Image (cartoon, rainbow, N blue to C red; front, side):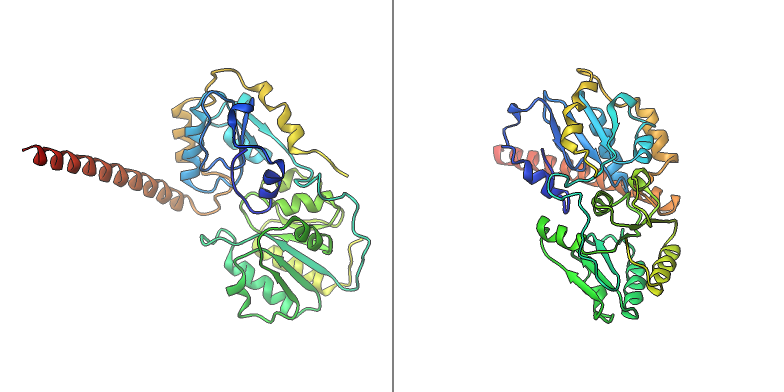
Length: 335
């Protein structure tokens, strides 16, 4: 297995496979972008967060490699890939819990007065998780008696301008024991962002903890616990959380592991089969169907395409100039 991540990296590390790829009949990549296919082996890629042209282009390149298969976590993502990748090379895994071998399906019995809300994710510099939305959420808890537990990095600058009396920030390297402890202590788990979904929501569903989540990606394929709520916009999310904060409500197993799923993944891979339908299909998708996780306007999508192509052109030009420069230097030395 290959790849790095935040929450689901622990799942990968727990497997403790040695790096000798020759011992395996198939190679699973936790991240498709970037991934290096292993020659002579079926390569399986976990596909999430298709939110840029460079990632879409990466998928196209991987689909040109024989014996490749793509696993998505939502029917939405699978339907999108099927536009340019053969259906036989796409599988949808609707996870019941990522940490099924670590987190018991028994819900916490330590009920407390008041409500505890949890936000389990880190922030990235590209603002894929809206700064405005985070600021509004923090403001809600500044004037509430409920507690917001934030487990992840990147929040320090946001919290500075808010009253932190009712905000608990755990900014540390991911620890499964710590993650499980804080997740279990919550009455609601929140995830309002629009980048396909969060694994904390998957684990919350396995523990029967209600969630308030954006209606997108693999969230739509999960069996949500009772009292859970889907939201369709940032404003709706803030409104629903504020309504719950004003109320006096409290919250009142599933096992389908990825390893079991992967055990049969290679059965659908045809030897030497190239998953890409046709470059023309990809070109059509590229121009007219931005990925579902790309939530900006179509004009921004075209800017992404042009920028990526220009960067590739400049890199190629610089390599050519460097090659010519080395030839000229060599010729001068010989003379």
